[in-house]
Amino acid sequence: MTGLAIRFNSTFTDTDLPKFKYDELLSDAAGSLMLLDVRNWSAGVPANAALLPNLAREQAALSGITGDTSAVFKKVGSLETSGQGLLERTTKGGLHVIVRQSSPIAIDNGYTIDVPTNVLAYMLANPTHNFYYSQWSKVTRVAIASNGGAPSTMSIENAANAGYVRFSHISGQQMPVGGNVIGNRESNSWNVTGDSFRNRAGKSSDTTPVAANYSISKSLATLGAGTRQNNYGPILGSLSSWVFYRAYIEDLTLSGRSYATVDALDYAMYQEAFGAAGRFYGDTYTAPSTIP
View 1 (spheres, rainbow, N blue to C red):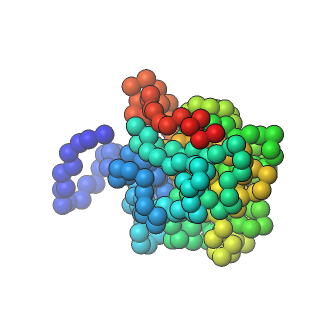
View 2: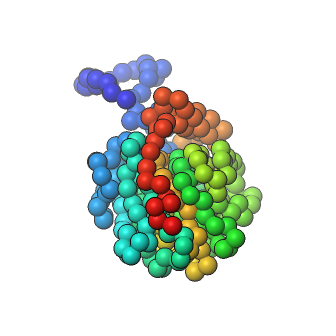
View 3: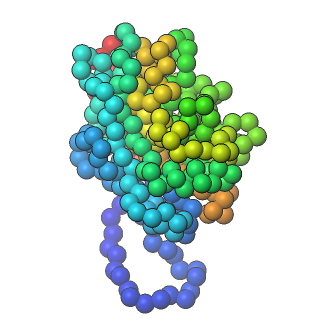
């Protein structure tokens, strides 16, 4: 989307006037913590430790988070050696990972997009708040479910198998869990090829979080075997190949918005983006079959 912004150095008193936001999904004031969208990235595959812009940075600041809230791209190991996999940008800007399935890849080989330390600290300080998480993606080759395990694509959890969120292709492995869940949607089963919208909202299952425990997994996107959950031995030869487009986190308790409100807006924007003439419609990429 393009447009012209003119700064007017005065104060408006009409509270019904529309507010400028970097994205329609964002809260008007505090509440939105992270919004990552590939449309705002530089061309090419990000370098290790590259900072990826947070479109919710103004709302994060209003939420009391100080400092840079950019997400961090991390390279773990060397997935692209010895035919283990491939990382590329698609024609529509998505980040596509292909992971070998003909034999197991080596442990700790993949990529993560990590939540910044200051945003994570805010979440850990508020474990009883209801958080909303969503991810837009496309599965290009399914995981081999018969090998067991539960590969994840978003994971903010600790070593005790508890935490804030996990998106997995096995429903029983997702978080939040049980009575902590206040809403969830999957537009397409994760282990089916094609476009996918997933969200989940609720409280953490870790009521007394310790920051050090989250060094093992704090990712908005996990590609390949980049975190503990995807390093489980039986699934190192069965990981899915997929495209990452967008991820979002909102503190619903702080924003005052309901799950239904945010879900409806997020899902409508997803449908528009992947529908005919949408910005991700007709995306193309290397066929996963090139790396059996």
